[in-house]
Length: 416
Image (cartoon, rainbow, N blue to C red):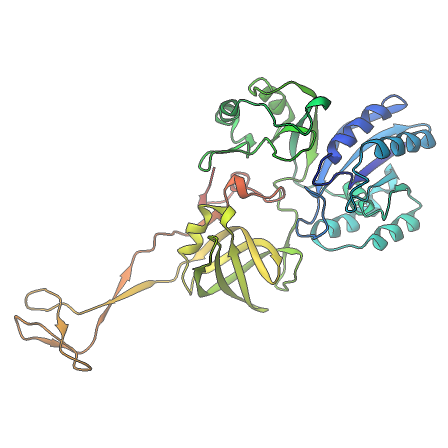
């Protein structure tokens, strides 16, 4: 029989990676069956407070004759490699018959955009008689089911290389310039490898996990070719995943705004941007639901300059996630710019010089020509912004956020 095997919540902030454990599981399953196609790495709702480190679950399709043997292999690997000693690590694994996978689509969409409970996963498992493994409270069952049921209308590929076991937990050894060379050669087919402006190699993580580097791109063959460009410590193995990275799959088109959800909203700026200690920039917009606070936090770097230049009256389309009743921006589109004016003393029609104040509530006068005027004049000031899309730089980009290089739209201001 053919089963979708989904797995999630095996890592912690101290180590491990669910993709790595899934690759090990695939290799073991190949000994008793057949793995079909690429595995899938599905990122879930990025705003969930109890999410795993990257909030990604993995699934793959396999042809298995002996399900009990597959369950035994899986249980052994999870017990050996998962961070079970961490109180926040609660693995879950599901074995879903191929024909049942479409029954999980609605659940999966909620896991990516909404908030689910462990009870929701257990009810779905019971209703559809899905074989599964539950460790501790089994929160990973949510992601495991979602990774199987996700309907992907837009995909990218990610090639992940894994470290030699003896290297895990130690500083990574790599030639930084080789990743810039790779980006120069393959961008935009391979994207978000480096952040040129902020001098950050995005492909190499800083966490104590088994991942050495990860490359995201539009075609698997190009990712394989790019391996010839990177210069790093030796890797143990690598794997290409189909993923919903860079697709905006988490974004909801809705006027109703709630915490722990991500939205696309068209609104009007009603409060001038202001900055607080730490470099975080805030402003407020008016939506159909009321006033909403928006933020561009310090890690968004140069994107904050765009936000700082907004003024009340600007119409903007916002993309971001809501926490603490604040929309954390991922990108924005300026739909319409309000006119900006400054008030100046009037010009003398005789000599062309600026008039001076004639005294409180007495208007203005020209000292030379003795001409008078009653009020200041308004002069329109050119805006340093223009309509179009603006995004946070790669170093601040979330897994699910769709970069502008993947959006076919005019007026893209791409931070690379």
